[in-house]
Length: 342
Image (tube, rainbow, N blue to C red; front, side, top):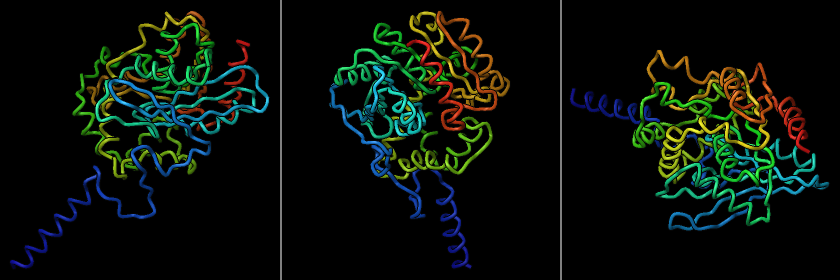
C-alpha cells in the first residue's frame, strides 16, 4: 500500500508539473526556443543596431532599413504592435520599397530583438524619443509614420511630439481610441500583469490571435508569428521577456491618447478592420462592461469626428491585423492613402 500511495503521489506531482504553463521546460525539440533578443529568428531582412543611452543605461535598438531601387523621396517608418515585431511587417516592407519608399522598421526597446532592460520607465513619450533618435542618426528629418495596434498609440504620440517631422500618420487598427479605465476596466498592477505573462504559451497566443487578429479564421501561415513570440517564452531569458511585457502593458493601460486626437496637425489615414475587438485588460473588466469595449466600427466614427484631417478606410470582414489577414487588399488601400499627400 505504501508503494502504491508513493507511486500515486509521484504520478500526481508529475501531472501537476505538466499542467503548469508558466516557464515549463520545452520537451518537444521541434518547438523553437529563442533568446531574449529573439536570437535565432530570421526577419528575412538585414537587422542593424542603434546604440544609445537612456535612463542611465546603454540600450540596443534593432531595426530594418530598406532602401528602394527607385526612390520616390519619402521615408516610411513602421511601428509594430504589442505582440508584433519589425519582422511582422515583412510583406509591407516589400510593397513600400517597391513603390519607392525608404522603409525603416524598428523593434522598440523591450520588444523582440531590442534590449529588454531589467528596469525601465516605459512611456510612449520615451519610445517616441527613442524612435526620433534613431531617425536622426540616419539623417531622416521627415517621415510618414505607420503604426499598427500599440504602434498606433506610439505613432499618435510621435505625431504630437514631432508634428513638423511627421509628413503623414497612418494608423492601422490602433489601440487607445478609448480610455479603458474610464469605461470600467479596473486598475491593474504590474505584478498582476507579470503573473499573467508568466502563463504565456503558443496555445494562449494562438487562441487570442484567432479571436482578435483574424476574426475567428486561422490560417497555417499565421503560425510563424505565434512561434516567434512563444519561442522567447521558452528561451533562457523568458522571465526578463515576461517582466518587460508586464511593464509595457502597464504603460498601455495608463497612458491614453484618445483625448489628444484633435491635436494632430498632419493628415491621418485611419485603417480599421471592422471585426477587430481588441481592448487591453478586457478580461479583467466586469462581465457587463466587456461587450462595450473594442467596438472598432464605432471607435472609427468617434476618431474621425475628432481628427482635423482624417481619411477612413474600413475592411468589413477583417480583424486586428488586416496587413497579415488580407495583405493584397490592405496594401492597395495603404498605397492609395499614402499617395494623397504627394
